[in-house]
Image (cartoon, rainbow, N blue to C red; front, top):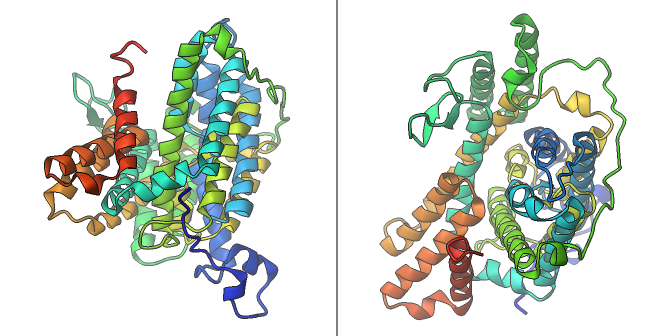
Length: 480
């Protein structure tokens, strides 16, 4: 089994000090952070990803299963926040990294549109649990860490840059600043139906928050992104009431002050799981293909996100290796299991964690803070729901810009590096999928190196990954 070296601080490496147990446990001083930065970073990450509490129930509750049954939006809201909170706190304590977890968008799409139409919801969530078990086994056997080591340095840097573009595109789309093009275009300026123009108060809120955060950021003001989100939210509340806008104008989240800040949680979906029914109701082949897709999507989404966060937080070494990486990966697998048991879909590492990292978060304490906010959201969902998508998107766009800065570490003067790096970066936003970008980058790297006669440089594991992704991309054409 290939082991990543643990680059994290060890107790025997530190001289005795009067630092608090919190500092020693989370390595706050060793990683050049402070308690204030961790608290602010954890809150910023939560605000950047709080939309998932609203979005996940909307998507999953809108699709009937094979029996025509729907999941309850209210129960999904509770379960989404519960799973995100528990797993994120676990990531902070066990992985001790500034990585938050929530219902993964890529896996969510497979769950809703591929699995649910051919089986019941408990059977779907049973497959999600098996996805988590498979990921944990891959960590225990060394497969997952071996894959992380097998990726070339330039490809790792390209993955981080590509995720930055992907995050920025999500932010721009959620804010209504760009949308699917009309008349055959891929993208257009402004919201759908706007004729390619920027229009409406929500766009003004987004732009105002972006300008505020951007100005504060370039002037080196601590908490710049957080202040941008807060400023945009305050402006949205004012605009919402002054202009008499409806909730639908904001897309996700509504800046309406709640009459009652508390909500009664509904835990009815907890443990509503059928672990074996999918293999008979949908058939072994269909269930196997869906499980393979779930594992592949979750595996490489998490792989790319972990690499990007480690690089952004400056806690990865020169080869892109993270401290306590095995603990991080096991927690990620446990998150998929938790998501299945709560019927909220796989709870995996979330790329919006980079928002908190940009605010100075470097340790697991930030994740604990984010997780506690998610747990509080179970009872205070109306309060957290006032942050509109336009405000949260401010963080995503600026984080994307900062992640692009790592592009300078790629050897663009070498065409054999430039081609797979470019395809990796471009395909993530173009396909709207992190795993697809990684897969296309891996395949192109293998092909280019082989064409150069540098077959031995590829490595056997990269060939295996190339074959896996080639099969994945051709499954539909093969009728699987």
